[in-house]
Amino acid sequence: MVTATLSLAAACSSAGVMVLYARDLDFCRAEMHIPCSRFQISIALAFITWFFIAISSHVMFWILASV
Image 1: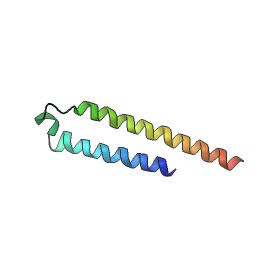
Image 2 (image 1 turned 180 degrees about the vertical axis):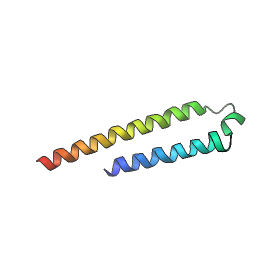
Image 3 (image 1 turned 30 degrees about the vertical axis):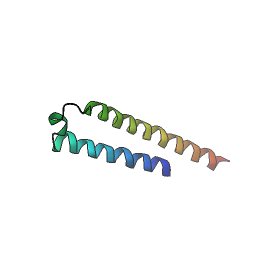
């Protein structure tokens, strides 16, 4: 469960930085050479990865408890 928690923390902090750049500072509009859409896709994939890690941790804990 520690890995899933750390993965969630990393995804949330990345999303927070992206919100800061994209919406609060308008950094993505000012700097056109920065691929903000790629950052958003990588953050979405980080949340999907966290979801799969959490499921894996839950299943492994369940298997460990049943032995």
